[in-house]
Image 1 (tube, rainbow, N blue to C red):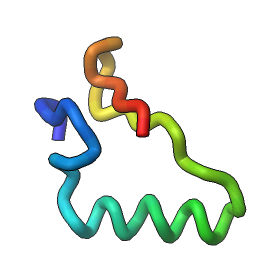
Image 2: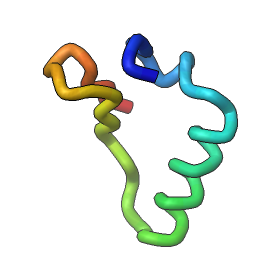
Image 3: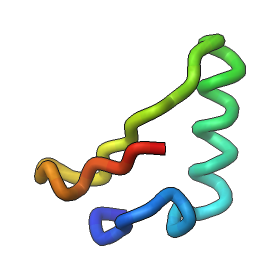
Length: 44
């Protein structure tokens, strides 16, 4: 996952997990980090 650069590249299961988190927590997940570098931060 560390080489992903957009939300479109996420596996379907990961998108489902993000949707689950949003529903359970009642807040949108706006930023996803796929690694330690700044370039590995994806804004949804």
